[in-house]
Length: 143
Image 1: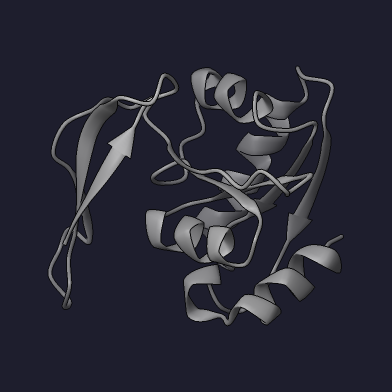
Image 2: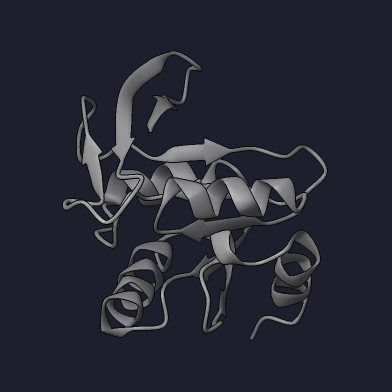
């Protein structure tokens, strides 16, 4: 599956390949760079949810919330600057594993330089595995 990645000005900056079965690697950037993020904007949302992967960002967007996928767990200063352009309230939603915990720690460090409210969602399943209502509830009940 190929997913187009658009830059801050709206132009396509890359393609992301996603394995359909159990192939490795699961994701592969066909073009773009390490500072590329996937945005799924939603005008009516007061928050932006930062997730690891594109399919989770699409699921969050379908639930009616702004989403940004950092395409992994390495959050760069450029990612942070782009994320803060979307909203003054940022929610981190990463996998429930060691890598997800590290991503949350990196996000906290990067967002500490910006005047944003930062909270976290922790669930056993990724947003892409949840229904829209479950996603909205998780975001509403975040810590």
